[in-house]
Amino acid sequence: MSLRRDFIKIPLVLAAAGGLGLTGLPTLAQSVQLLNVSYDPTRELYVEFNQAFAKHWKAKTGQDITVKQSHGGSGKQARSIIDGLDADVATLALAGDTDALVRNGGWVRPDWQKRLPHNSSPYTSTIVLVVRAGNPKGIRDWDDLVKPGVSVITPNPKTSGGARWNYLAAWEFAKRKYGGDAKARDFVASLYGNVPVLDTGARGSTITFAQRNQGDVLIAWENEAYLLEKEFGAKFDVIAPSVSILAEPAVAVVDKVVDKKGTRAVAEEYLKYLYSEEGQDIAGKHFYRPAVSQKAQAKYAKQFPKLDLFTIDQAFGGWDQATRVHFADGGSFDQIYTRKLGSR
Image: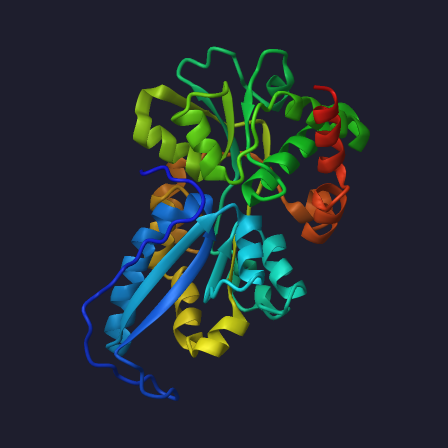
């Protein structure tokens, strides 16, 4: 795994061949290009998936395809699309970031989440803790992250979707254990008091922890944690906390772009293929939890710990409410972090 931060593009190109038409569609050009704008930890997943989809599309249509990837913090990526980045598909970290594409310029139609199975989340994940080999600070659960002398690495919730999942998982743990939102707020404030740096995205935080050797514990996407363990072996241990959040990364066609470019058919097929047996198997291979394929779920079940998982709707009333209360300008995160900066 090559750990690189912020924006990258990984082109996948197959040799050109003659185009064939799909039933009910105009004759296809010899080749087509898509841009998948995604969040940090999906780089490796989509490198393999793009290769599989290119073969599928070629066999189905005779048409060659180039898929380019762009990665960064999910909120930052959503803003790039709003500012005009020509994404054919957005495969972001959370539905709230896709909803921002609806509200800010109508890039995506409001019904986007009903177009694909499982609320347009072909794979799920959760949030876990990564510690250094031997777990020298004895970290077992969320409450260990607020102890004096524990350095916590997590990205910025203002720019990173993964960071928002991290924040909300910690908040709900504290709310359940200590009772009420006031106690949860104090807990999360103490946690961020132990955070020395906020990277813009999840992969940036992984680099800070794994390659720059900062911090005692990394709050991470489950797939990112196991990729670290796979690459670095005995250097890191993954800790499953007592409770965590069911993370549901969302995928959507960027309607305004595909209608302008004439790429709707291939973009829709691209996202549908994430639900195919091959797409679901690739998700599991890269440590995402397959959402719909029972075969893939059974194949990869042993690599995922059984966790007490709650959903964003159950604990926070959905992304609109969670964003308004916690992540909007002046929300709870801003108040907590302003207080931290003021105490320095």
